[in-house]
Image (cartoon, rainbow, N blue to C red; front, side, top):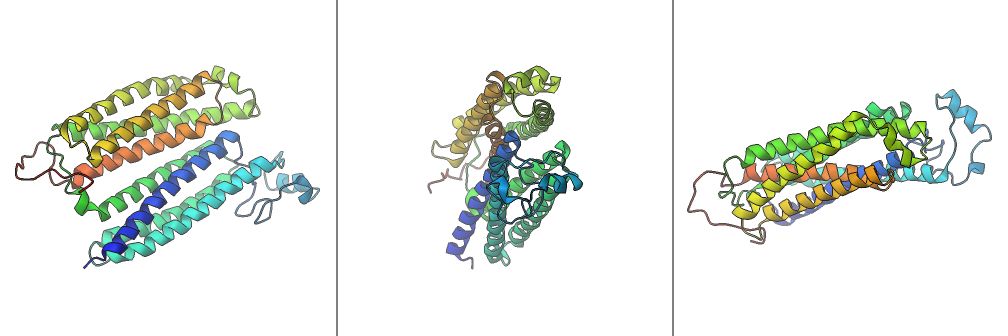
Length: 337
């Protein structure tokens, strides 16, 4: 018989890990927006040290030549950028420990649902691969395609974690009443998820262009970057309106069909809040001279939007009452039951 307290600990630890991964994405966005990616030109050490220096005087006098020989031209120590990148690495290591603990706590499902354990184990290995990919990003001298792959893998890891935790709670999720939702709700939700992924893909193209423009401007004069934006930026910007209205339709149907205390409704409201925040951050980038603070927020919102949509999809898949399936004898149940 399943140990209830152990199952609760696994859910809480897994949820904490999900938020930690999102925090890594945020910190990674800050690193990228501030141009701090090469703040540590080597890996896993930083300027050859496990704890990076705070002053240039702590480095060898010829450190420019040392890193030039390694393929990193114009390496210049900047304590803010160095410690920003180092913090990013520390957060990544912390997530690695959390993933390990999640795998360890998931062993309670080996008898009841082995898939939960093996999914957790897969996430652990993927995080290890993500760490290796991070070192490759540094070795590539921050090639845009490598940065994009690094970010997309983080998105996949979060989705896998969400599915793993949701699967462990499917008895509860299965009692959510979705009977009142329209027949086409599931199809529209899938379209909305595809639209989000498409928007993220376009965003990565814009991000790559911005990285090039930022390098050309030496990461200053942000107010002039917009003059060099590619056409895909304007497509990306306009597409956000379609995404907003599609998701508004989804949340409106949830509002009409479920109990007002349902976890589905609260998740839906969160989804709209995230989309609006992402749009505001995008407008800020467009109209206020590309402020660095808006870039990581915009990236984080995009990742959170897909994660919330994916959770809604899982709820539909596990719920006992699928849309348009009659089951009048089933009573509604809310998240507080």
